[in-house]
Image 1: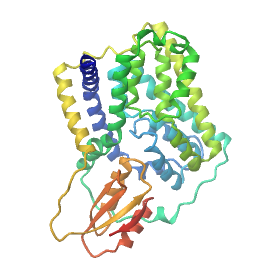
Image 2: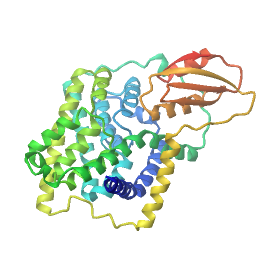
Image 3: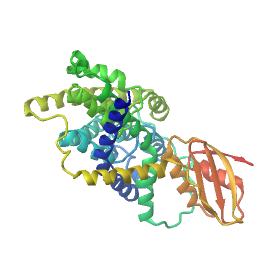
Length: 407
């Protein structure tokens, strides 16, 4: 029993260390994208008729590191700003499947073929879904609400610090738990699943892909956390195509996301969304299996020795520090005499939503600091001058969330 625990911990650490350098680099690029491609600017390009909004949405969705839950409020805000259903569908399909962080981990654990194939099919599926919805669903652009028209008085911010905060605090807070869970699951698969388990019909071919879809579609798996699970499954004998189906359908869909999408883009568009994901996942899986069969390419990466072990170990400890800082609550001390209000907050979907709300409120006139506790759904707002709770509640509502004052 003791030896099994030690072996499991060693497998966990080896996997964690292998992906650490690539994930840290992905966080850096994600921070740059966050600063260079703010949501307010992206939303302006997703409205209007024709193929360009869909094309732009599919392209922009590929590198953005948003999970299937985090992408919903972003898409909803785009929709309120006039984005078409087709553009929103393309964005909803391509975005959660991949991101710069998951692409780097895919390169590390599954090799360059997967690293190219995955974002390529994320783009293709987003494009197909957007065009299908544009062709089959009548467009009814939602009017811009008064809440969306009102905004806070922006103050200039340090873009470098904003990049670091998003890349190494907000984004890790979103993916740390599912990523660590994915590594744990992959370690358990490596230790407990016998090699002959996938030797039957579900280890290869279209039947195995359909079986994998039934498992992956209703559950939540983030694009990054799904990679170690896929690598462990390939090591146990499933085909690269079935692993690809898991990598595509797991992050792109889950029961909660589907229910929310029905409200955001409608039942008919959601149906075409799911049909697109299923069909393109099957086509991608079959194509990838064929590619590996004719090219005699190894399904598991041959990039493991690209970096020395000392660099991987150092990066692993750095990544542990990043995850620890982003996950554990931090006490921020202010000078005595600061006035603050305490609120209950509703409408938060993930840690990224909480961080965005903090930043948006801090850009409002009269607000010094906002601290949002996602787990407790609480918000503490420190003020610089004599402003009321109603002012903060109004600004929070304008950002898409509901706040209720507490004593």
